[in-house]
Amino acid sequence: MYTAILSGCFALHLLLGHCRGALEIQVPEDPVVAIFGKDITLNCSFTTDANFSLGDLSIIWQLTETRKMVHSYSPLQDLQADQVESFVNRTALFHEELEKGNASLLLRHVKIEDEGSFTCFVRIKEHKKAAIMLQLAASFSKPNLHLEPNKNLKPGDEVAIACHSSGGYPQATVHWHDGKGGNITKNVTTSQVANKEGLFDVRSVIRVILEPNSTYSCLVRNELLNEETQALATITGQHPKFPAVALWLTVGLSVCLLGLLAALGFVCRRKIQQSCKENQTEDGEEEEAEARTVMKPLKNADVKEAEEEVLE
Ligand SMILES: *[C@@H]1O[C@H](CO)[C@@H](O)[C@H](O)[C@H]1NC(C)=O
Ligand SMILES: *[C@@H]1O[C@H](CO)[C@@H](O)[C@H](O)[C@H]1NC(C)=O
Ligand SMILES: *[C@@H]1O[C@H](CO)[C@@H](O)[C@H](O)[C@H]1NC(C)=O
Ligand SMILES: *[C@@H]1O[C@H](CO)[C@@H](O)[C@H](O)[C@H]1NC(C)=O
Ligand SMILES: *[C@@H]1O[C@H](CO)[C@@H](O)[C@H](O)[C@H]1NC(C)=O
Image 1 (cartoon, helix red, strand yellow):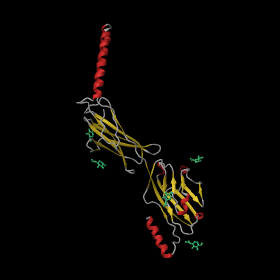
Image 2 (tube, protein in one colour; image 1 turned 90 degrees about the vertical axis):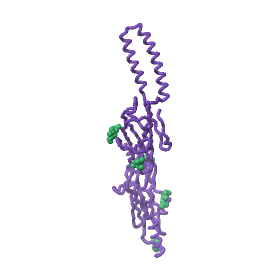
Image 3 (cartoon, protein in one colour; image 1 turned 135 degrees about the horizontal axis):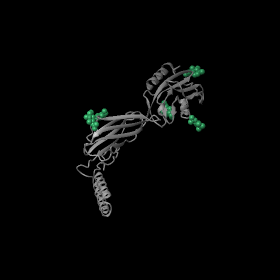
Image 4 (cartoon, protein in one colour; image 1 turned 45 degrees about the horizontal axis):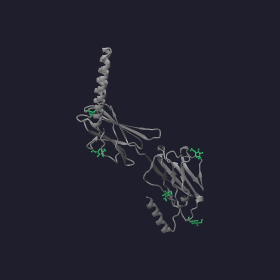
């Protein structure tokens, strides 16, 4: 488009000796993607002829839909009047580029509200305008996984695995995969909520029946940035094998409890028998509960280091 019009003008220039009255204005046809919080340049350029003087130039950048003022320049100076509050101190033209026909606008610290169409309006005797689309994007954080319930789990239990990722834009697509890489779409609920800056927090919950040594991974994808980030959890059942740490912990605790029981027994023998019996039952229950602790909290793995992490 850009080259087409320029060369059209160039051809005319060759034919007629000049390109009279041909103020042309160029902006990118595709939307410009800006990263939330960063600066972005909205490109706009115009044709100048041999007689061009900066004193004849006016530029207005405005929001296409509302025509609100984003930035204005009128012979030889920037004008602050009428600028929309949210753009104050955030816009600039490249002054040294103006005489080359460059009316590009620098927009600092882009916000989600900035998303939309901007019009570049140029006047040198005659005037032309063109619109450019600004699209905002932000990366999602690496997800956290959380098991509910997260204690005393055993194969066959129903469990909810929640995947949480935040600060992205636009909305993510979330996929769950099992250990073999297959998509799981059943029993998944995903919700996305915008925070006050307009960035999305995504939360996806999958309900599964636990199988021993099963892996679940949650993949959060930003289509616009073509980025994805994931977390995966491998759930190791106690059954049939006991993780070594848990085993030693249980053995240690059992020894302690036995010692405690022996001491209690010794004291009890000399005390009232009623209360002694109660104590023994409670301790017995505690030991049982400890031995049934099967699962441990989850760890996350980044997509780049997507090796399986076994939870222990
Ligand atoms: C430049 O200005 C001169 C005098 O004003 C005029 O004769 C000439 O046609 C102009 N050239 C162009 C390309 O506009
Ligand atoms: C813009 O910058 C000036 C000078 O640094 C400051 O006084 C003013 O408060 C700023 N305005 C906004 C809206 O940030
Ligand atoms: C206009 O100036 C900006 C800032 O220097 C630059 O990024 C852009 O490429 C220029 N555009 C053209 C068409 O030269
Ligand atoms: C899972 O879903 C995604 C997106 O719908 C798709 O690109 C991918 O090929 C699917 N994978 C499998 C194994 O079905
Ligand atoms: C998942 O959904 C299927 C039906 O789509 C249902 O039979 C199954 O019980 C559900 N699993 C869980 C863990 O809720």
